[in-house]
Length: 444
Image (tube, rainbow, N blue to C red; front, side, top):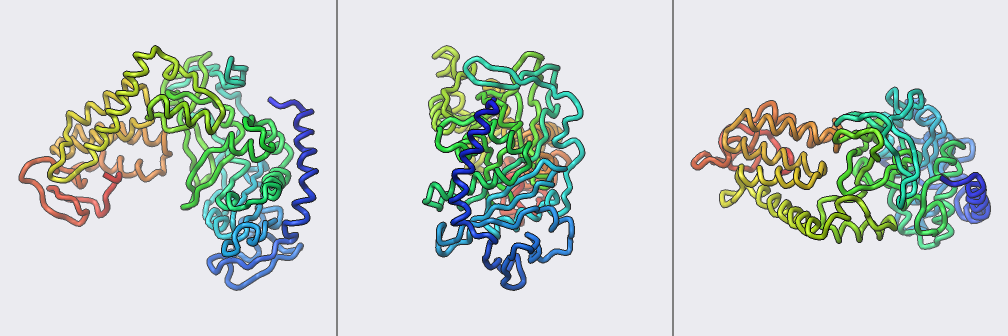
């Protein structure tokens, strides 16, 4: 944790950079909104409401944002591009606050979330009313981490928090580093004091400048309304990495909330961990990526086991990729079958990898469906549904399609598809017998 002295020093750095911001950023911001946002060209003045020119009659929607946007002119980004702007609400999520760095059109896309359009955050999100199921402690060789203080079972919720900062695309096109730094720092400065404190207490590893380094070190990447964002959530950033973690996270864009659930039983005294990367990669690739992006050599049990065991793990991971490729082939020449799908599930379980389990389960469900085994297809599809909910969230597309396969395998495109003499064409562009859905669910 950073001391108060270091936090004050960081805030002093903000003050030194403010001259750059005041001289370059437009105050008030002046630009034309895209036609999708405004009905006619409009210019903000200091007295204008931030969203006064958006086509909406929702008062809550407009009054949620406290500051009018502050923007880096397009000439500093790309003459043909939109400006990059800061949007801040100190009232978001019952006073937790949020700053968004984005172009006007990308920001307008975010406003489709009920969390913003209706200022609707579920009860319990960001709550501090009950003791958390963990304690923050110093972890040898890993800084600080979260230690479980009660038994957590698979599916138990550990965290549910809204972010304090969203960073969209555009900053990478700003070549002036002082300009970019000022944008980051002003976005943080606009937040409520408690959110500012949480941000400056976040770890950094490259000693670049403070604000940008903290974002690069602690942000999660999510796609929100077809745009990639970096999402800074201070509480969740305190969870350390493990290549075989005991918890998983997802982001719900409707509530703008990041959730973390236990993926297996976590016992008191055990550290709560998540994975920062795709864990189904060979050890060398995992460690190189972690060191490059986060500045540490992974020392989890998987990465530090006996060399012979590490070799076996890498071999299993390579075999998993081969089985996935085989099972993805649904042509008449495909070698996919139940035995390969069962082997895939077994390898995933030997790897102790929750990541990839939903995919393995649904592939086995599809193979049973392809043989006309409705009960077995339904059983494995239900296992896939539960795993996908923990990994992707209840509203994810994969959850919907896995549930449909579980409930009506006979109507799925895969039904009896592997049986000789049962193939024929239907609207889903797969050769099979039986009825089908109008699209290709689960992407297979």
